[in-house]
Amino acid sequence: MKKAKDIMTTKNLTRLVISMAVLMTLLATYVVATNHRSAIIGPSAPATECRSVVVVTSGDTLSKLLAEQGLGHNEITAIANILKSDAGISTLRADKDKIEFQREKDDSPVSKIVVIPSPWRQVELTCDENGAWKCNTVDIERDVRAVYRAGEILDGDSFYLAGMRAGIPAGILADVYDLLAFEMDFERDIRAGQKFSVMYEENFSEGKKIDNGRVIAISFQALRGDVNMYRFRKADGTTGYYDAEGNGAIKSLKRTPINNAKITSSFSGRRKHPVLGYTRAHKGVDFRAPTGTPIPAAGAGRVVARSYNRGHGNFVKIRHNGSYETLYAHMSRFAKGVTVGTTVRQGQIIGYAGSTGMSTGPHLHYEIIKNGKHVNPMTVKLPAISNLGAEDKKKFLEYRKVVDKAIEQLKDKPNLFIQM
Image (cartoon, rainbow, N blue to C red; front, side):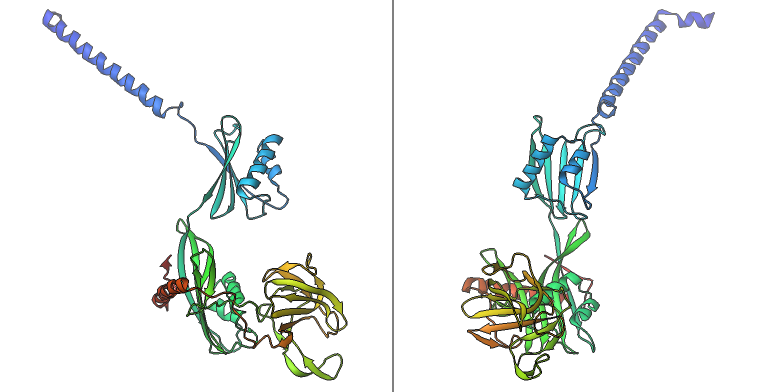
């Protein structure tokens, strides 16, 4: 009893009441804090958006893909129109384009559409509270790195084989072919011991290589002298390739319209005709090409003849300026849309190789006519498209020194790169 009596004294009761009050205050504070934390991170917080990515496949259309996501006819029409007018997208490419759809929840309508036509560009479509779709194009920043590769032609090599052995990607080699074709004949100008080099861009995003960029510089030990080309942007924003002195490296005509095609008959004042059997002038160069091989225009110009005759078979003649014309003969067929009066750009397909007319097999007969006289495509001096003006030339020479210094740093170091 003594212990009970002692506990129930006035002093002890006061202490008990104060203790209970403190305990209740702490409990209330804990409950408030817990409720506040629940309001922040509990179930009432917004859910993460749901996203799905569709890779366009053969047979897919924009209407089909949007309809599969639950969009109605009016919305599909509005989205198609805005993509065409604001982003220049009117068709989708199978195995290349991607479309990302975003929703607030799995069962919510689409609130955002992202069309990804390339690794470096995406088009974002968002729907406002009134149901109107708006378009915004976003350019993805590239991490551009310059790399350098060098090689040498060995016995029995083609430039392509030597380039692949040097580690140059096939796409870059194709660009190099197109550039050097203005100066070289890859069938006759390739010899063992010739050295070459290429500096080109590699494009990265978030540390991962996405694709290759543009050719920055080329060097090749050609038979008629070293060929050097540098890519340079002029003050007006246009780009071109120039030699070490700043003169235009791109000629108005290509010596070899079909890359890497073997020459079967050269330009000659006296050649025994394979069909007629007697000797006469061969006013062009013959390139072996299987039937159906695309034939690109050697330069920009206007088609002045598209016809058939006994000797040339199906042929196309292009006038490039007041001095130069080119002729392409023995075609199996003409390219669609190429008629007399058509303006063509350099590299545009004008027809396809064949064996029409006086021909013993499929090939391209190619002629260059200068001031009305036939000249040898392999040796004629061709005019450059454009040279640099004084101010641009000054900047080019400074730029060339920077490129040359970078090349020296990268020589014999294939694992290094220069940040552009």
